Length: 87
Image 1 (cartoon, rainbow, N blue to C red):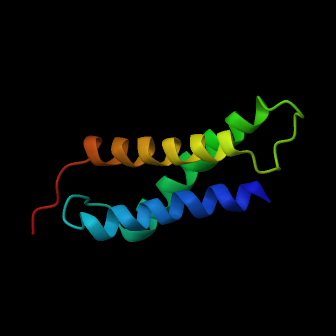
Image 2 (cartoon, rainbow, N blue to C red):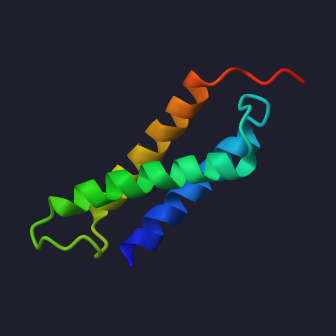
């Protein structure tokens, strides 16, 4: 269940980035959403693996916080490492 939450968090942050700074990214809409979802999923699963009960697929507040941080970091990485689209 938390896997869908992590994907949703990352995709929504990717959507916000795309809506706030549309000219800054030269990649497409789907690539931005996928990058955010991948960063959030990776960070959320890693944080869940360190939980006390050892379950990867239960929602933990720390894992959700790590998912948000992971999505932001992956989207910042995407923004910094890609050239600015000139239109």
